[in-house]
Image 1 (cartoon, rainbow, N blue to C red):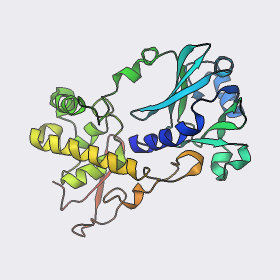
Image 2: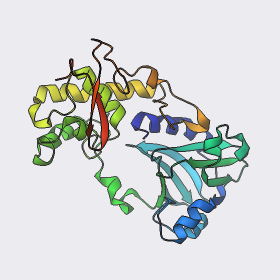
Image 3: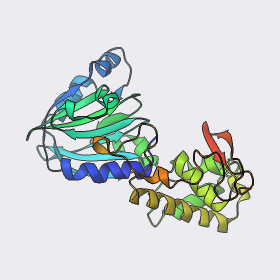
Image 4: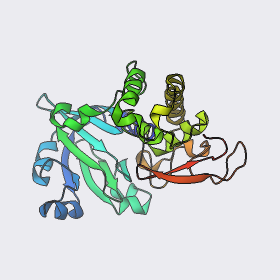
Length: 290
């Protein structure tokens, strides 16, 4: 699943080629239309297909921002502001192309689910191979409460104190630290990849409970997480599995990862081990991480 750096990369690439443009019309794939007809919330969520198509026609894209792992399209019609919220799920990707044939990778071209035809020509396309992503049109964040429950952005002034306070609560103090830092209510945007990397850099076992780590070490861990996220943003994210930046572009952070997906520790040469934490495979070095 794309994490904060990957989503940030999409926003930075997508904003210059979409902001200021107006959506003329919208097409939704038969796959999504059929699912919604039988009551399934597929990609276009919280609204009927017909209403989504009608509401989005004529919308002007004012700006794009990121909040945790979400992309916010700030849009308006007749000077009325709206928010189109996009989550990439496992395999979502955005493309800005003249025609669908311009999408180079066949697997993305075959799984186009929402196509915005732009008033000035060309297409803004959302493709999703596994269909776990979502597009949600709201008037404001408050219209979808889960958006308000996310932790502060990790680069904000209040993020560290929020992290420390959450770690001290009974809900989180007894949980494995890996599970805690992957929880978006505790830290925004840090998933399996970057949690693995930060814990390895700190030499902390992923299954160690948050309450058994000193405040000083937690502060250092938080700062390490921020450093890893910022490094990945500079590298354009990690292009692992089906993640792509806009138009199929790949990042390079996967070339810098030290522990995620590794069979041997790069520092001591010990064979890595793995265990399941919060449903995710956690790779660690049994020699270096305690």
